[in-house]
Length: 210
Image (cartoon, rainbow, N blue to C red; front, side):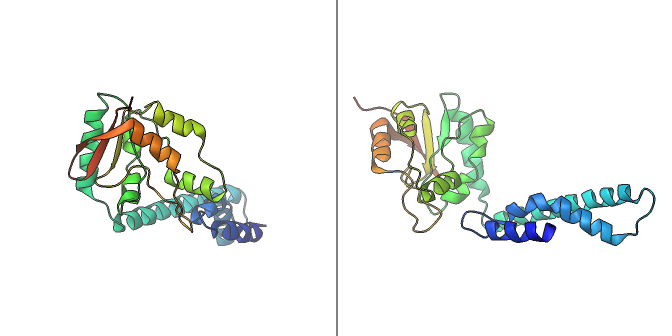
């Protein structure tokens, strides 16, 4: 049964947009089988096997977490960029809500990885690049409510990598089409203007045109 589950999960995890995380739910079951193979049955042996199984599962999860963290750091972590973002979030949240706009900048993926900082300050997180790519690949259009939120300036400030056009992000999956249509970008252009630039970020503030 476990072998069949691993085979099915491997096929699913190998598809575009998936990944090795699909195998994580099977780690405890695999650990139980492994621990059972390490010892002989004995009174109370199932308790030792279960304890060993969870120890193995924990070790695998921790090792996987460290591996992914190391891979992410190897892909580039700009400490100055992170510090600048933290300072901006601290300053701008005093004057209103703030989010990071998805863009097609070369460092967009790295900046998107820092989007949790405004969230930890109590801000919204309306546009997730991976989720939008999944929806686009499934043929699900961007909801009208998203455009209405932009027109209504529900977020006071949007940050984008310096020089990048906000909401110019493209899908993570081939053929890498735009995630935001012309109507959405027009709504943004009519509602926001760039009011500040730092060495690494542009700040776009709500300023709807009459």
